[in-house]
Length: 106
Image (cartoon, rainbow, N blue to C red; front, side):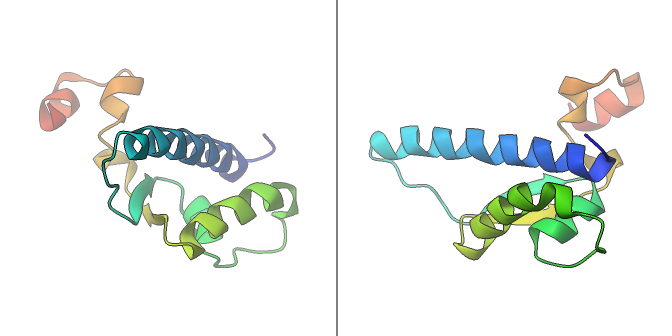
């Protein structure tokens, strides 16, 4: 990746692809999926790009992935929201966090 925004964009696209796969399994079981699903992203540049807001002209290298995320938003499949890194519950499972942070979420 050439930037933090690009790395977060790659992670967001992988997340959406995995969720779409899981949704197809859920639908094949005859269950309904509530739309739009919400993706909480802790990088504001990625959220701006996914929502179609401009953050400058230096993001052409992530254009294909940006378009994929925008398409997911425009079709009503997903909403992209910014979340503070301190409020991201997934960090408990993916990062080495201290006792107070762990106890806050678990």
